[in-house]
Length: 484
Image 1 (cartoon, rainbow, N blue to C red):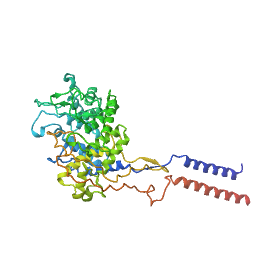
Image 2: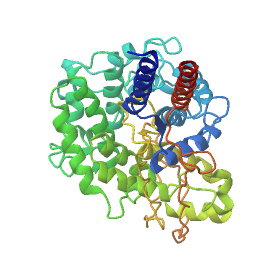
Image 3: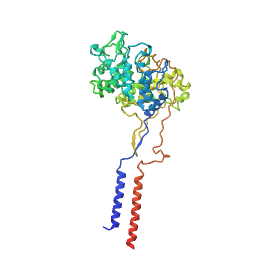
Image 4: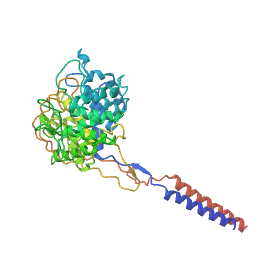
């Protein structure tokens, strides 16, 4: 074969190979805009992070509220927001273990609160700390030591408190038991007895009661308690704990979790919101956040999306915040709180309620199950192949849902209230806001003045151009040589 033909053939093969390398390569991946509810969750977490001082959140009566600080730490861990604040909060909680799960700071020794210890165990795991050496305490061993043993009869498996004096019935509730299941599942083997006790708090209808005790003492199960009050918040916690237990291989946990999720669906209001029980019966963002998170964990995506839409409508933004626009990202307890803040700002008296509401509500926006926080990457954005359409973010609601006002509980005595609920500040009775949050917009996919790009590397095109130019020059030289 003449040299010119060999060069031409080689040039053609090189060109084809280069083209094949480009067309056969997988498409470049660009980050798609985060879903609207994830963006809202991260904005809420950013606001909450700004409320921390030296690694802790304040309470209404103390400069540090360790229960609320733990809730804030879990919320930041769920969204991956503000690593320095998360690290500072983890360190501070670790330094104050006994300030939270005992009465040592009040000079009363010999008491360890079971629910607080279990919550600490879970928080350490969710924050990617070592639960067996958290501030010098082995929280897993401490939690296991507070689980009632076989001689406790139908109370076997219950998380309890330890005290040197008889203080009456144990104050632990279904929140505490759920934290015990979550914490033990995240830190090692999960005792089946602990799961069984949680399942016994579920009534035949599917919901869970908040307290395992009746007026005359502990009752064996929810169905054994006449007129047991089923609670949305407790059910949401239990569903998530049981899903984690099922993943750990616990018997009966998966069925109980599905039954609990079914019951939650029946409790969702037509606008997508949820209410609790007792003083939190009215629709509120705390209950809606926990229930939405549980429904997402159970695969009930449509119902979880409806709950997220309610929460997004209760979130302050620069566009709808009015006098409270500087607090963009915060989530109101209900529409009355939203309206009052938009008109007059968030007062020092109300700020505690906003912190508590935001910490729980954003969980329903982030939609990371409690059992997976710290294990799965926080939701940010999803990779999308170039040339395909990015997922469309849900539309921002045009108006806030109508939520009924319910007075928040006054809290419980002692250092360890596990249910995060607003303080006793009565919510004002004003009309719900009608100004919607502005739609979340995202920059053009190209990021370069709106010019579209394919995402393919330009080096491949340069290679082809060089091959073609080089081949043409070579053929020209050879042609001249043969002519001469």
